[in-house]
Amino acid sequence: MKEFESSVSPKGQITLPLEVRRRWGIKAKDRVTIQVDDQRVTIAPARSAVAESFGAIPPLGRRLSDQEMTEIAAEEHAQEAARDGQTY
Image 1 (cartoon, rainbow, N blue to C red):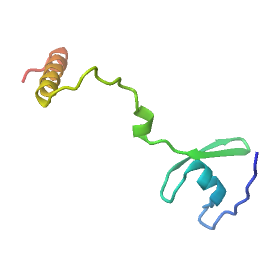
Image 2 (spheres, rainbow, N blue to C red; image 1 turned 180 degrees about the horizontal axis):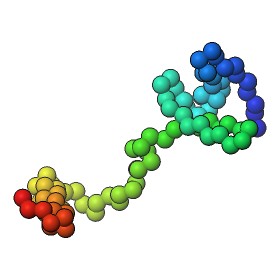
Image 3 (cartoon, one colour; image 1 turned 60 degrees about the vertical axis):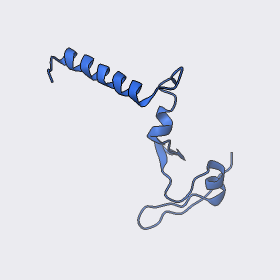
C-alpha cells in the first residue's frame, strides 16, 4: 500500500495527490466520500444517485409506444388513487 502526504490548508482543505486522482479518475468538482473510524480516514470517489440506482429496475422485454406508456401510467395512477380512497 502506497502512502501519500498532504498538508491541511487554513480552511481545513487537503489536496489529493495527482497519482491518487488519476488512479481513481477524480477530476475537479467531483465528489468524494470520507469515512472516519477512530484514527483512520478513508477517502473514495462518491457514486452518484443515478449510478447507485442503475439496474434497480429490470429492462422491459420490448419497447413500448408513447401511447402504451401513457395508458400504463394512467392505470397505475388510478390503482393508487383507489387504494388511497381518492376520487378524481
